[in-house]
Image (cartoon, rainbow, N blue to C red; front, side):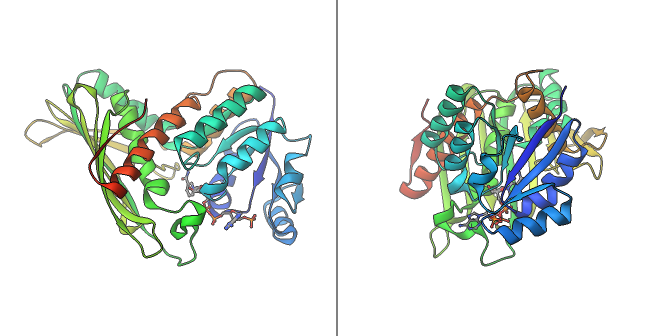
Length: 332
Ligand SMILES: NC(=O)c1ccc[n+]([C@@H]2O[C@H](COP(=O)([O-])OP(=O)(O)OC[C@H]3O[C@@H](n4cnc5c(N)ncnc54)[C@H](OP(=O)(O)O)[C@@H]3O)[C@@H](O)[C@H]2O)c1
């Protein structure tokens, strides 16, 4: 495989703290440029992190012919615009979650990338960690019987008043920010799409949901309860409950390889049957390597961009239910 040359759109905290180390660890990967709205910020970032080229505008980075792939950690309301501009500039895009603000935007993005013949993927890193696949195998092996219920939550306490997550104009909201994970988790574990959802939220004065609780109804009677928030302490768990027992994962969505992962299996009397230990692995690095393989044509992306459209359809229905009340059918 030849080296994939990456450019990063913005000096976002997540890109700096988590993705840069992941890019460094990933095989056949080089970060060649950084862009910021502020040329000095871009220059300082490039210098600090040993990135060869810096740009004072996102457009300039897209025009760089020495870049194959763009990583987009912009505020959520900017994902669609910049991903489509990147596709039109002939670049592949790994876009932060949620891929867009709604399913219609996500569909436009998928169409633009199909037309440009470029790869688009959403950063649900947890799906690239062996932990997620080990849970699926335990389910398929029948260890917990027939899957009937999923309980999944992701929350943390927001630290900064000026955080983009609190700004409705920038695509703020806890369902967009962390609730999108339990949604993707439930869909992945059931391997199907929910038919309908019911949600309730607590809203900030500025009008973003700072916590939400919801039920997803899947075909075959599977129910998923999901909860999320940034006005709640750190929790990032899920439990898949079957007719004979359950599988519990405490650190579900952002394993970065600093410790081993653990899946706990309970029997039908809530006695622990086994603890499955997995070697440490950086889910972000694995995600970058998966994307690289798609760029070089070695293998299709493990999760096609159409999956992001399906996730956004559920998010659309959840927001509608939380705002208007009642059960809302998920678009097909
Ligand atoms: N996958 C994960 O584990 C994970 C974790 C955290 C966040 N994320 C995602 O990453 C994205 C960024 O989150 P973050 O917490 O890293 O955000 P952040 O630190 O606030 O960074 C956002 C960046 O966007 C640029 N930007 C452009 N227009 C802006 C505007 N009007 N207001 C504020 N910033 C603007 C800024 O960079 P310049 O000034 O340099 O242009 C800013 O540094 C979000 O989509 C979020 O959902 C993913």
